[in-house]
Image (cartoon, rainbow, N blue to C red; front, side, top):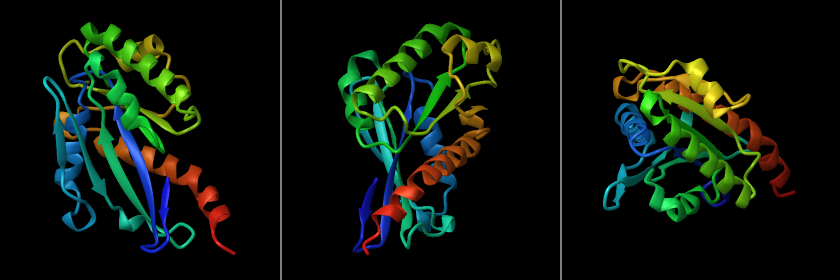
Length: 198
């Protein structure tokens, strides 16, 4: 969370995390495509050799004000490839919320679990264990996709909010986004009010 008092903005960072090719980028591309151009920035891609991290600013003005500030959300994805662990941790730094995107294909169970454990470890190392996390079970439209109850038990997502999705079809994408935004705003609202100048 970063407060820009001059512009009266509350800058909040949400990171989409998950294994390579799970649909993180697809989520953000769809959100960007369907968002009102007046309330979102450009879609920026930082390409690596075999994967890409993308980010854009998404200003949701309809959310109203918090302590007199306008929420300005910055959405990021992390590269999913295993050898970009340092980059993933760097992108997570300063996050206010996380969306963990699961690849529901049965053959990706191990990759999902490794990425989940990696995320949890990074959040602990960064002191971010208590930020909101929302889980999206993506690719539920594919033949042979593992059912959500099985995935939930295998990855042990606990009590985190979760959504079945097909990012390529736009199913569950905005439900996921709304859930993480709501959770983040709920958590930071008290902090913002307490930081208001006397």
